[in-house]
Amino acid sequence: MGKLSYAQAIRQTIAQEMRRDEKVFVMGEDVEKLGGVYGCTRDLYKEFGTDRVRNTPISESAIIGSALGAACCGMRPIAELMYWDFAFVAADQIFNQVAKTRYVFGGNAKIPLVIRGQQGTGRGNAATHSQSLESIFMHIPGIKVACPSTPAEAAGLLRTAIREDNPVCFFEHKVLYASKGEVPDDPEFMIPFGKADIKRSGTDVTIVANLLYVQRALEAAEELAKQGIEAEVIDPRTLVPFDYDTVAESVKKTGRLIVVHEAHQNNGWGAQVVSQVSQMVFPYLDAAPVHIGTKACPLPFNTILEQAALPGVADIVSACRAAVHR
Image (cartoon, rainbow, N blue to C red; front, side, top):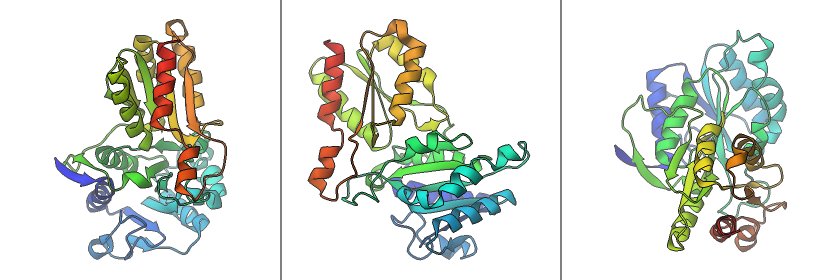
């Protein structure tokens, strides 16, 4: 084990995979000498050259379109978007081409393409650089969706994504890049898609959260414990595929479900989880499931206003208390 930041874990994994397989390469805006927005590809060009660490024009549609072509021809591109907000510029490429190419070729075409980038609030990046968009990508069949919340998961899930023969949208959170944790040194360390992780065991209420909100949920669980309520915190790690079974088994035990995320509450992925899990465990529920997300407004530049739009630890605690003491 070595202690790495979230960004360092991503960089190390990319480097290890590029050494292992010469078909793996990186492309995106300023990924060469700048090393990407948060340094996740810093200095890789010195080892692998500019053919395998490729700067691109400022054109997300060109980045994703050419990455898809490379994947179809047997390469394993890692395409970086500076912000997931900019994916809408490449919406046709992602939703109509990347997601559907393997299907329209009857499964004969492999699409080993990773699209990675950062999203989320916490730095006052304003309305068009702060969104959490993973729910939208869950809706389109043909794309896998990964959301690591720790450095170890960033490494293990990214390695799985790079070796995957289907396209993966890899969502990173800008505030998590500086967070540190133990990361296995093993260059074969992988975390399987579709396997949730129970971050904290509990008996009274189940909290499901992703990315930065795993930390928020754990903070809420600590506060609830002081009040005699033991919360179980589950990180799904991948939203597609989603490990509904682990969540359902937890809710059978606790009788209560709270889902919280930074994505907007309206049609956020938590609504799907509440719907699916409720159908699986309805006889076990002791309270109505609760879905918590960001308010339905563009995210403000002002950080105080930004925080006002977001769900906080107090909101999670309040929802859990209401479910337990209904």
